[in-house]
Image 1: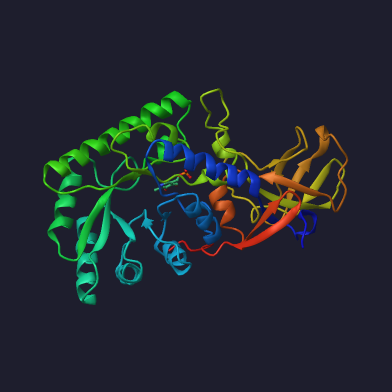
Image 2: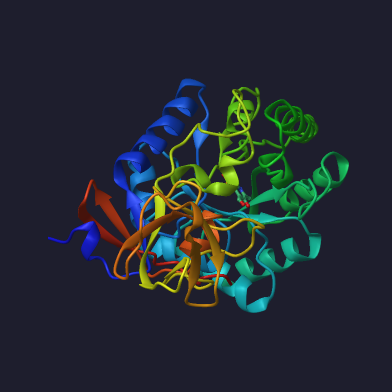
Length: 366
Ligand SMILES: Cc1ncc(COP(=O)(O)O)c(C=O)c1O
């Protein structure tokens, strides 16, 4: 049996009590509102986390990339939705292979030529169910504009033999981090209203639209109240991070709907005057945010980057002396890209390592 203090650093730790509480909170919220739960796997890239979500009632798991979805399928996770377009000959060939072995997998599309290429590749395999395509709607990044442009793409899918229309994806990434809370509500309601209008157009055209999927950790409270939204695909809530804490909640400037379950543990490896140097730098934490990891239990002590392998704690305001060998845990700035840096998650029950979960889709960014 291994204990927290014995794990070689830097390492990724998961507090199982907080993690399970986060899953229970989200699953119960959605169940009470009759919404499906297809959480996003891009956050964790970990089949064991996906299994925990499925046990809590998830209908499937989203994947940001084809290669992530392939890993989830290899581990027996069903109900996959690939939320970004799969473009190019090689990947479309793999898409068809994945759809053949996991026929309930859905793939997002937003481009006519891409749809035709997928249809042609599916035709060439001879046999098998039509491939399930979801039309991604545009809210500032990818997607086809809601309304008649989306309807035109849906009509094309409906007219082709080897693909079938599975529904709409309405994901507004900007909405997820809009502050304050009320403005976030306004933004996501407006975006989803456009998706629901598009659904109406499609159905008036005689084409069934069984799914409207989208939403995030930041917007789930609003999205889950909207009629016509069939399911939500939040990701970060399983772990949480500093980025999400800062978006604000109904009660103030910090968002605390979910607990910080994910930390990175480091070791103090040097103590030059006034500082403690830890063994976690750019390769231990995400670096895509303007703020740095937050040390736990060190009051106002701040972390500064000190290179690929090192971070610097300035001890001016430290409540205690730090020595070489001391272990310091941090809440990461942004969970998704931090997880992608590690091979494993150490799942802890208190001080005990209950399991070590491979992050099997780590680095699967194709
Ligand atoms: C398409 C899509 N859906 C859902 C999510 C989940 O969002 P969050 O981690 O903010 O809950 C993301 C995150 O980037 C996403 O890209």
